[in-house]
Length: 141
Image 1: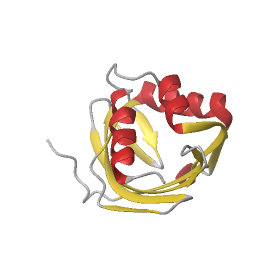
Image 2 (image 1 turned 90 degrees about the vertical axis):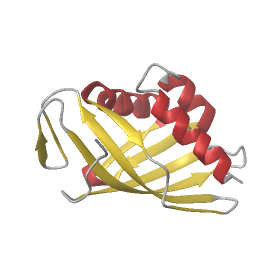
Image 3 (image 1 turned 120 degrees about the horizontal axis):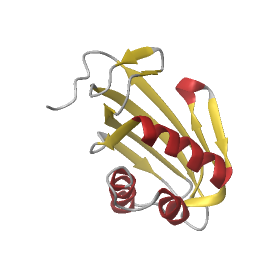
């Protein structure tokens, strides 16, 4: 089972990839099966396999720094993890994200809900991420 302690480590390792910690390839290999799918629902985008997932994550990282905060909800069984957490973003350049324009240096927060399918190897095989933007979700200063 993908324990809550392991999930917290997963989030910490993911956040570190944006600030010179773990590399994205090492992160993927630690937590994902090689043929895993990462689906980002707001963009109707499915990234299938290691190369596509790394390309997607790298593209996001080029545009903004992402910090997933402590989850507000976490549920797990032998084959599934579900979590809800706020995510703070710092834009590295002017961009549009899910229909909302942002200037370089702007911070914004999304609320994320994610569902993870877990393999017998305790790695993710399919991840579906839903995120909601609301101007009331203000990042910490």
